[in-house]
Every structure is written in C-alpha cells, then in structure tokens.
Length: 219
Image 1: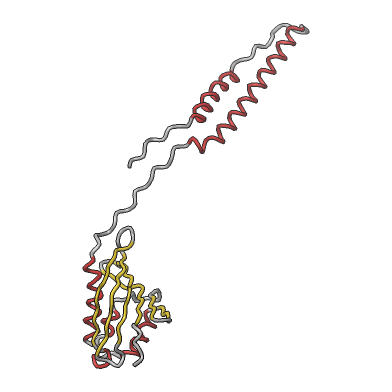
Image 2: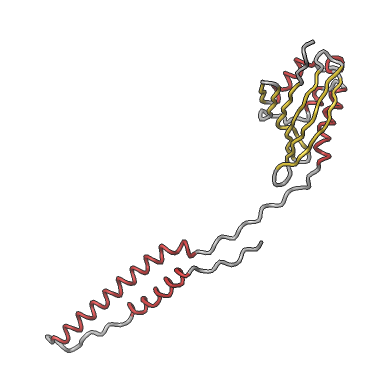
C-alpha cells in the first residue's frame, strides 16, 4: 500500500516554534543608558539589560542544542525503493526438460551429455549415501569410474518426477523430487533423488544433487 507523507512530531513543532520565539527575544535590542553617568538608575538599567542579554543567549543555546538532538527524529522517513523486475516468467517445463535430457543422454551411453545438466564449477554439490562430493570434476570422475561411458556399462535409466517447486522471489530456482531406477547394468539399483536447479541466463543447471538408494533385503 502507498505510504502516507510523514508529518513532523509534536516535539518537532514545539521545538521549532519555541526556538523561533526565543531567537526573536534574544535578538531584540536592549536599552542602555546614554548620557547618564554615575547614576544609580543608569547602573541598574545596564545591569538588568546585561542579565536579559545573557538569559536570551543561554536560552537560545539550549534550544539550538535541543533542535540538533531532535533533528534525526524529525527527518522524514526514506521512501522505500521498488525492487527490480524479474527477468522472465518461471517455466516448469524447462526445469523438467533438464532431467529428461539427462535421461536420454544416459541411455545413449553419453556420459558427458548427462553431466551437461550440472553446474560446471567447483560450487557443485553432490551427496549420495554418506558421501559428499564437491566440484564438477570430482563428480565426473566418480561417475566414469563406476558406470563407464558406454551403453553396455551405463544401463537404462528411468525417472519418475514426483514434485516440482519454484524457489526465490523471481522463481529463478527450483527443487525437483523424484524416483530413479537403473537396470541392465551390474550397478543396477533404485531410489529417490532431489535436485536444486538455478536459472543461468536462458538455461537451467543443477547446483545440488542428493541421491539415495533403496536398501535391498538380504536373500
């Protein structure tokens, strides 16, 4: 809602008005005797005028100090700034497309195509079981060592997307929850995953991957 214009507090109004009145009093001319030397009346007027002048200066100094102390409180409130507009609309289909592209690349034995969905930097986080890996290079090395880079060793990957949610004020991030299943390989298994994606320019990239495997019963 629009903010109403700020009005000065009663203290500000009283301080301002009182300061003006006493400034006027202190600036008023003080009558001094002329041509009345050695007269008790003249000395009395001089003494009274001096006291009045000193009192005016003391009051003026006190009100000036009070005005300085009240100045921050009397200042108008700053106008809130409007946040910059979001660069574009949230596209859930584009988020899901990253995972679909990964699945298709995996099933073709294209490990590099699968990894293209991840952020290619040392900030990438990948957790699986009780292990935490950080960085794109380490993630790629672990995948290649375990699954190879051919259809015969990588097998067939399937995803089931369970939930997709936008994150952030501009919906420039998303979290995806799903199930995965890998067959036709000695490393076959199944489980659940959650990935966080961020929009980088016109594309989405996975910045955090958490994957867990089902524990199969011992025969």
